Amino acid sequence: MDDDAEVEAIYRRYGPMVVRRCRRLLRDEAEAWDVAQEVFVRVLKHWARLDRRYPSSLLFRIATNLSLNRLRDRRREPVLAGDEVLHRIARREDLDAPLLLDRLFRRHPESTRTMAVLHHVDGMTLEQVARECGMSVSGVRKRLRRLRDSLETEAT
Amino acid sequence: MTQAPDDVQDWLLERYRLGELPAREHQQVEDAMARGAALRRRLEDLDRSSAELLREHPPAAVVAAVGRARAERRGARVVAPLAAAAAVAASLVGLAVWAPWSRTTPGEDVTRVKGITPYLLLYRKAAADVERLPPAAVARPHDVVQLAYQAGARRYGVILSVDGRGVVTRHLPVDGAQAVALTAGMPVPLAQSYELDDAPGFERFVLVAADEPFAVEQVERAVRRQHATWGAGANERRLDLPDAMDQFSLVLRKESSR
Image (cartoon, rainbow over all chains, first blue to last red; front, side, top):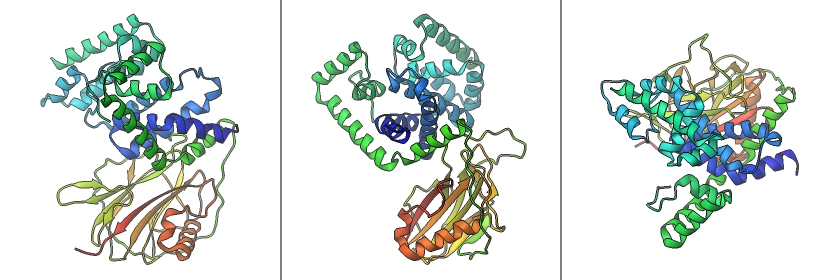
């Protein structure tokens, strides 16, 4: 199979999942498509060197990460607030919630932010998040606890 | 797709459909499927959604973007050919900009996003708001529209429109023979908004972008030639331009004045 045919086959298989993922987080069709393309460019550029046992997992994680970057750059309302703590912060009228969340997320590694979304928004268990991110369950738990602590500190 | 009360999250269903779940989770979905029809319907919805998405976004753009990224990684260089300049007609009335975005200021640290195809955003001013116009949206004479572009990885660009009478209007640059340097980063609104005139049928907006400067006339000629040959049918076609140039087209359907 030549390069283009391989890319096309991979896109046909995984493209819809990636676009849906970006759509869900970004809620903007053009931006979702934009980010989805970037996901494939990033992943397929290094395709030959990747562990390809479960490409859907890798593509999903990168789609999540790049969509969150786009949301951060957008600096608009926190549309992905699936966690109760995030909701609570977002509802506070006396705070600039998007900027607060932005500031909080900047204090934590990007991977923590992705873990938080996988767990709180997508409903993955800690074990599933750990598998997705290639970490131990206790490592994921620790990171999420640290994030939650700083969210609660900022909210009070 | 909605989250159903069957404990099977969207991401799990996606992986199930792709056959990339570990055995235990695969069985979990199978069991849920056996318990009721709701999950089977979600799976059918997922398949329908996939088919629609592939129709809306066929693989060509991704194949091209990945090819470019791989070529850039190998050190290849894409050069767009140059051509002579020409003047254009103006069919739209230019108005002051009212774009809802903040502009990227000179010197701001921005990054060109490798591999992203440039695209246009089109907004219409409504009574007290601004609405984003999707492709094939219906527009009417006197609607006031605002264009913005996302440069993606490209450095130079031209934005034109052509109406149902075949009249071509320059939007970027308004004057000048060469494609302008595009601003990277967030979508960039053009300096003017436009009031649509009473040309019938359609208004097609075209963005052409490349890594090297090119002549505006090259794009104008391609637009004129295509619309002279195909009329409204040209809207579905790519302009006859070198592959090294990215093209994005957004067509509004025109209705007569209310």
